[in-house]
Image 1 (cartoon, protein in one colour):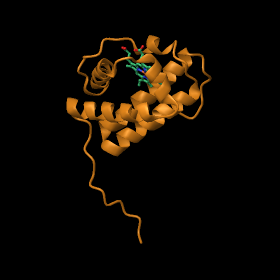
Image 2: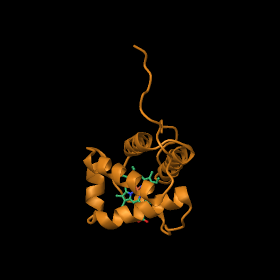
Image 3: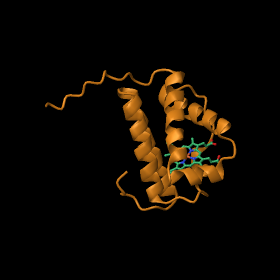
Image 4: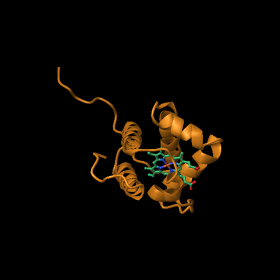
Length: 132
Ligand code: HEM
């Protein structure tokens, strides 16, 4: 038996619908996650607006739509989080991207997430160099 991947190639992230699919699938996993779920449940009373914000955020990051005008950094300063939350967040995010999309913009999504997570961790005073 050879180990050939028979799945059809995946498309890249191209439209607002693609962004919404990424965001909704990712937050389904986040909410079900033992480590991350409680942090989000504690902070977010109404998921509808949060998911809209996150669609606007990623559409701005990946499709340059300019829909997001907020400040992601400050929102994370008071959350009960440690470096392992970031590892888990990135692992779920990368897994979601890879399961749904393939290409330059998908790669960009993972690179942007990693970069922002690194900046957030440094703002929180976490040591650099945990394997994110
Ligand atoms: C430890 C990992 C993370 C956790 C537990 C987390 C949790 C949260 C929570 C609970 C909120 C809602 C805060 C509120 O409305 O009061 C939020 C908002 C947000 N998060 Fe994260 N987050 C994490 C990492 C990230 C990363 C890596 C990014 C970017 C790639 C990100 C982007 C955002 C954005 C854009 C918002 C919306 C801010 C706004 O309201 O304008 N988060 N996050």
